Image (cartoon, rainbow, N blue to C red; front, side, top):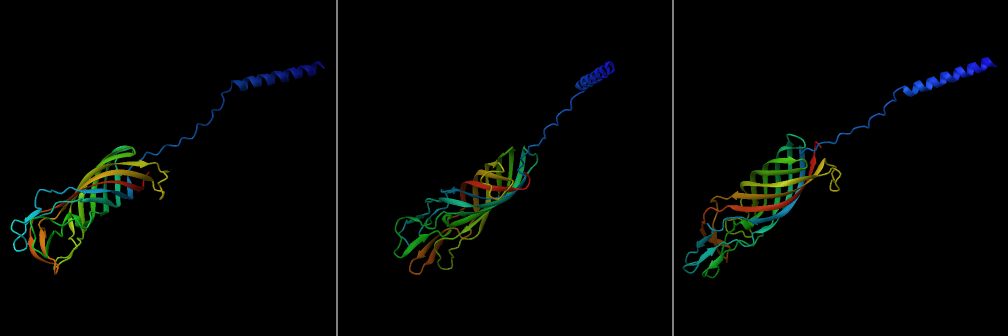
Length: 279
């Protein structure tokens, strides 16, 4: 009996010593939480989008837009003046481009963009204001006025600085445009000639989160922009001037050059872009 009691006591002592030793051992540390880095936004990538806005005439109204109508097509001293009337209207279209950002997050961004735009400057705003009296059966018109511009487009470089998802930029480059007048007479077609020039402006653009409700195309980002653009289409001295027209056969009887006249207008527009490529 005493032997059994001794064995039991010894076993209890061993168990107690083992528990105390185990308590002194260091506990295994819990695994650290998984770290998922947040992607740094970059403007690098291709994009396409749409825009809409308002365009208004910025032409020089002080030079090259009046001429004296000669006798016998008008009374002596009769002057035709081509003043601008409501040379403004809706502008809308689409654009495509590519940006490259040197440093993701915040940094310099360069790019190139091309756009094509519809322009509603009207078709019946190029008639002359007459001071004096025209002979019966004649009228005066300028078939190549700014009002005949129906569309324009640009190919521009862009240079800006990104503050994470906000991009402030300047832009400039080549511009082109064409349109049609509302008359065709004699050997002078109503279609206006294709003309070229330049454009310059600037804007601000903001990138929405990738999961924006506007992201219909599952692009890497949807961006919204507001942009102002000045466009100058150089028309030189080709076919510039006014015509006295014989209303009986719609044929010009007098052409009078009125000097160099450029098409100049400004556009303020908002745009929506879908960006593809790097996040």
